[in-house]
Image (cartoon, rainbow, N blue to C red; front, top):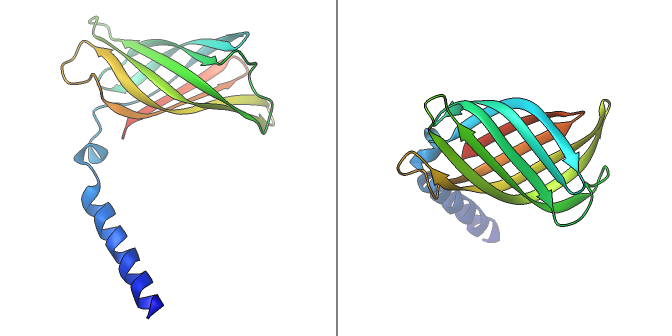
Length: 152
């Protein structure tokens, strides 16, 4: 009897998950990736990158800030915030703010600082973008940064 209840609950959860998936997940308004460079000063890393995707592509700038702490050593994580601003060749722009954590990870090429967090768009030239939320992923290694963001 307990097995029947457990299977029924699992089925109900799967059904709710399938029907609760937003249409935005199939066609996100924000999805971008890019590469660039960064510099670390104390508990901050400023970066510049060229990003491509939606809603538009172009040069991006941003920063990762830890709460008055140095970037973590491998195997450790610290709370952090991050910003990203993208401007296209027509002057359209949007900016987002993310909260999450930076973790230090040892790789054969050195120690990578990896920011993972949730963002919200705080300003945008395009109507309807402000308030859009999603995931931001920044990986910093040996002076190079990779940027990935997607609406969720």
